[in-house]
Length: 93
Image (cartoon, rainbow, N blue to C red; front, side, top):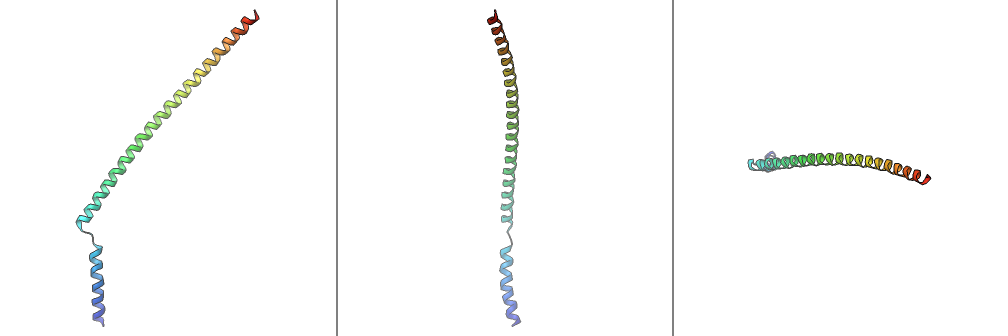
């Protein structure tokens, strides 16, 4: 009886042990895939950083354009007020 249990145990343990082990070529393949994934992740990070820098530059440019437009609007309003004042003065004469 013990002999049968030992034989059955050996028959189950041996295939599980052999199936569970990875070969060197399989490990190398997994390592190569991991390196490829790491390279893609690094490239994606660099692309994201470049896009962020570009977006920051565009935002700064837009803010400067907005400030310049506000200044031009203020100057135009002042000129319009002076022109209106000159017109009103000419109408009184």
